[in-house]
Length: 237
Image 1 (tube, helix red, strand yellow):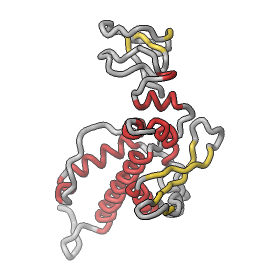
Image 2: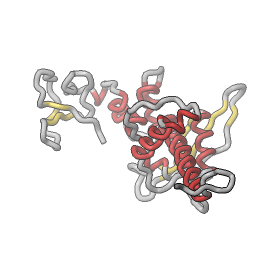
Image 3: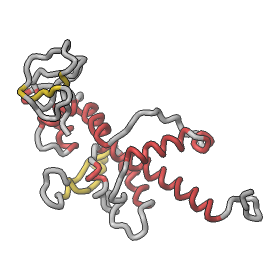
Image 4: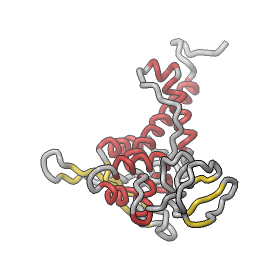
């Protein structure tokens, strides 16, 4: 039989463990919010310093710009380079909450090793379990979430607005708009190649096509062959 305190509450160490798990779930929610609304890569999330929130800039009534600072590592040389992301207020507030939950003595908002898939799975199990339902939390679907999926989703939302393709390029810190075209499934320019997924729904974004069982890019794109199940397209890494 489990020992309890005189007042009928669980022992102190059990309450401490429960609090640690709860704070971990809140931190995961902050990570997901920032990743989904900013388009940051994992390497950019873990570079968020404790003072990542820059002072809001007001440009008139109801026109406030919120920014987060971090480092872009990919294609920026050794150590990366500092950059800024314009975000909506929800992502800005999530960064503020995450700062309060950072490990004591830490220089960055999040730990250096982020397993977002595992964190999301644990958050989903907790939210859909008895404790989450007791708190009135909405049911979380069984979808898999990765930083890449979140970046592509944001890219599609941005690119299908007027001037959105260039805005998505800037927000995702792409070197070329060609990459953004691939993210947003909008063929054009260098993306105007014709190899598709087996169901013909998405264009190839590498300008090459591969055959089943082969990890190398074999030859330039040719006319699509939906009837050939062995031909598949691949998204860039």
